[in-house]
Image (cartoon, rainbow, N blue to C red; front, side, top):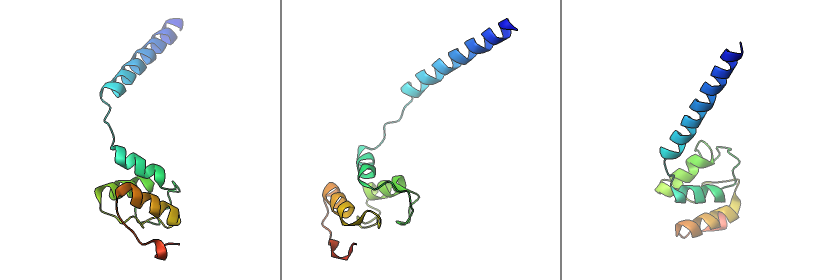
Length: 96
């Protein structure tokens, strides 16, 4: 019984170590602009913009496939911050 527990514990530790090493060596760097845009968005994951959460909206904004006025919960502050970040001009008079 003790041998079985010790062997399973050792196996778990070795495989966990290998997975940790693989995660570091095979990591894919993300797009810094997408992460910055996602930090600006409110993070409510509401889907009112038509995208599946704020990560999808941030990716679309970074690709230029969506307008900066896409986030209704964010309001004028988020629209202004996104416009500044992306270097576009936007009229915020129609945004609530």
